[in-house]
Length: 164
Image (cartoon, rainbow, N blue to C red; front, side, top):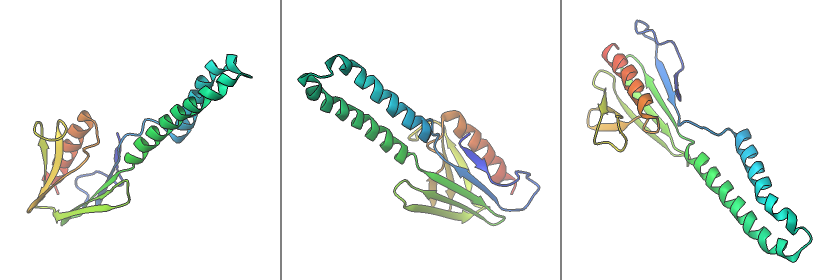
């Protein structure tokens, strides 16, 4: 799953717990380079019969523009997925810190005894939307996770907030 606890999850242990959540990255940097290389080769394949002709230079810019468009779209998708959410639970506080792709940081903090996770089966931007509620404010957590991962996340959070 694209989240992990950085310490033991024993509910009887009173030490601070920290969870890191991040979007699933299906393409590694090596896979990205391999995909672009293979696409480049496949785009050049139809140009082989045109080697030495003037028509090659007429088509080549358009094929390179297509390759650039694919590279740019994949790179933008990768950059948008550079999100990290860190949930820190101590005996008294619950703190959620979100590091966004552009470098800005959003923070939420609440007394742990007043904070509660909520699962919105319908009505959220995604099915099984998970939020943390504290006095006066409700924040989303793990909206980028899959539906099953959000259900599992809610189960873990519910158990932790019930048994501090």
